[in-house]
Length: 164
Image (cartoon, rainbow, N blue to C red):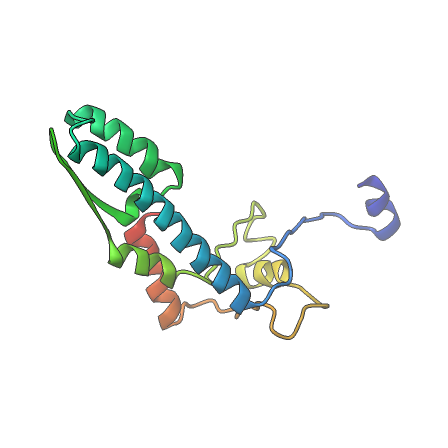
């Protein structure tokens, strides 16, 4: 760092990292595949617990709840399932609206920085984060705006509902 300051007269350096240069289509496919895979694994594991409860091998609300907690929290999928736990019963179902809301946020990124706004405003932060001179033609890009458009407003509303 001292050499950069001395050789180039740099007063402040902000380090930025990104996800690499992969196309939007590939990113969307990876996200959808991962989400569906995690939902399927969680559902399969919940099915095993349901089978044990139905067979009378697992009983009691607390014990059933403990087993479910281990499964549902393993991949952070609790928000996507409706659970009904009784003393000798257990049922579950996917929450389609929750899954769709999360999928709608695919491709929307939040950039956080510790650099004060007086030093670097939001558009500059995005520009510096997304500066990719050798990116492929179909690489992700961000539109810099100071006022959210309708799609961004919708995404922000979904974020508020999900409470990320």
